[in-house]
Image (cartoon, rainbow, N blue to C red; front, top):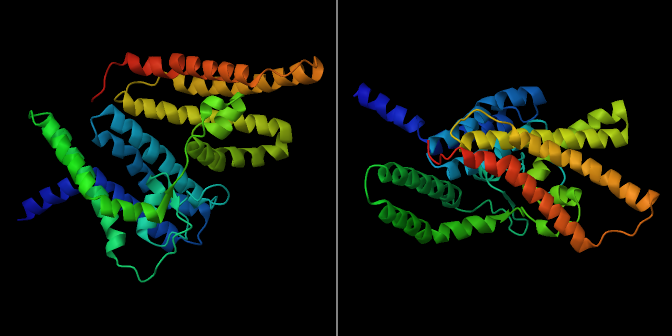
Length: 333
């Protein structure tokens, strides 16, 4: 009997969805209950196990696409959200940080791992059924486990397409829970027509992936700029903080490439790509100053600027990120 219980417990703790929920519960208890008013460094030490679990979760999936998505939303963004919460950097911008106002575990977990924010138009009803706190999490765990089962069975049987059909049917027939779940939250806008950007600064700062840009500004740019303001002045601090932020973004993209390519040795092209973007933004600002203020030439037409920005971003992305990753030729570990 003890042997079977040990096997069952091992299987339970090897399940990625269970590990994810347990790690989020750990962070929720310590950050919102035990250490609500504790020192920031102590709060950070308390969530290190959760951040470690976040780094392990993607390896549970053989698909490179799934590993890439999980490494972005969980290993990177969710970890940065917890870091921001540990140091109480939760003000400004969209409410995408699981703050102490997220009293229920459902709110904390959802805001931590999804690009969602609380729907301001929906009032929290204290008398609502506990079913609507448990059902969405149960629904997500069920679908995730069903997907894992499909992947495992598809490697040994020929019923892959039938299993995929069952998975989508399960998702469709749970639409009532999904709709109720989505009325509680709003999706955070990620992109804002990036192809219309007329400068690299506008492209990276305002239009491309606003979700991760906000997290990087909250956890890297603002602290770095505040620290450097006292040492090198406002202008130099702004430039240096931008370069530091892009370097951190490059490292995190390198980490995503590490997951996607099944743990191959990093080549650091992704990091150099974002360093190149930072240097190019600085050169762009200098060129714009010389063009308009020194030479007093007419501004470049917006359509020309858009084509130049889009062409530079796409060409450099192909050379520094897409080409190195595609060279691996490996989609599944």
